Picture 1 (cartoon, helix red, strand yellow):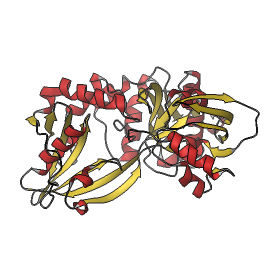
Picture 2: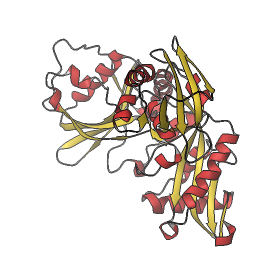
Picture 3: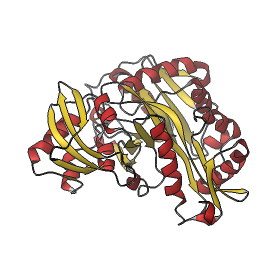
Picture 4: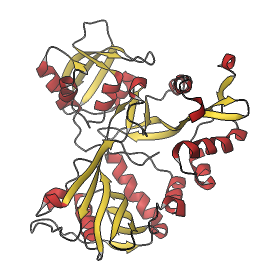
Length: 399
């Protein structure tokens, strides 16, 4: 990039104030210096890139060192792409592609089988082989009229606590949950301290954090509004069904609150606990965690499966050379995936495979959209059954 006067290179210590300014310009929020220092502990030494135009940083991208739970409970190292920005003064010059090419070369060289990100815009990352592997739904629950069914469990056991005084208990519950949940991420103590720092800038006009704690779950939430008040759930984590019900009963018992707003997953059972499921209103649904399989055999062999399967996949990767033709044999929940010269039976792009990986999407739906192609429709149904996960996939935390 030197011919254009732009330099792509590893970020130096002197670059970070300029990177913080570019991130603030791009997203309209100034990251607190102590929060940035915490997240920087998750960045490997050569994992932050900038594009410099003379003294200015005009583009940046980095990856974080994460550990991700996949279906069946295996924990894989994952490169979490974050802080991706291109200055509005330097658009349409190929800077994102240049950064991503170099960044993914480094991710591949480091041996990560999967890269992951969360996307501010949905149309950017498919061309880089990323598929939306989890879905988040926004719910608004009318607390004033909600009623639990007479046969719904009422396990109790919820306490009102001050979050920072119970960080070890919160972390222990979260760790149990993420070990069983596809999409769960290891959360180090430093990130817990950052979350519970509860800075004014993180409150979006709401109250300080409140918390309910159960032996098997917790809720962190804020209240908003001066007239009719409402609750915004920051995090609801339940390692058992009883904890899930108990925490929702506590939330719905908050007096003077008009509604409860929460981002959750499509399989959350709350509506089935209520006499009128319409009191849970879906206000939005969007992609959450995006995955790119950097090493297809390693990623596919790491997870477990819900049905037997024998097929040959032709996976197209238009960004790098990580695709190819693979024989996939699944027996008794375990897979063997090897490169092959055999004739392919199923054709798909790498982003589709990433979307299927955690069980959050169905192969038949992609086939209906002509994004997964094959002549044997029963085979595509078998792919559905194989890739389905017993535990609904959720993103552990945003990054």
